[in-house]
Length: 185
Picture 1 (cartoon, helix red, strand yellow):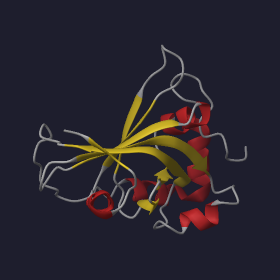
Picture 2: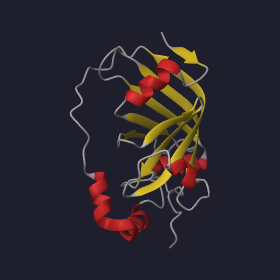
Picture 3: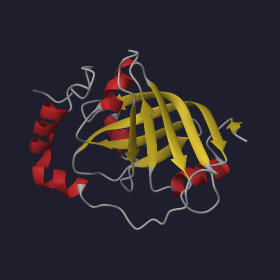
Picture 4: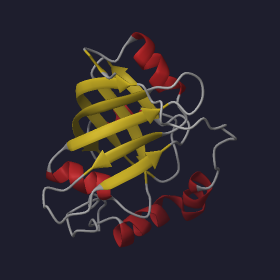
């Protein structure tokens, strides 16, 4: 049976920090808009900042749905699943916000993560509800390692190429919402 917790601390924090991957869910306000679920798992790019704040270093990618949805309404759920060891699922429900390299807050927040080629933002989640549940339906899986593709791809592009990529592919969401349009044109 699921349980609601007051804070991300103790065993919940230790569980989150051990995970190799987590999933992010957001949605636009429009009933016909696309719900988005995205995996995240680049090592050194996520952290529990305090008992009610979770954040990750967001990398440039083929889309920008999470950012678009957070800009529109802020709603977000972050989910961690135990794929090995005792079964468990932890969900963090809250409000997310985007901090870009062009924001004053960037320097302090980005220091919490390992710098990455193609980094575009820090997503900060102010957690309003923390829960865990059994995870009995989650399969056992063996972790083989991280894919070393995203970093080298944006390393080859360099900072200017990464900006050009975002200008081409990240400015609007699938539903036409403003997404990552922070880079100077």
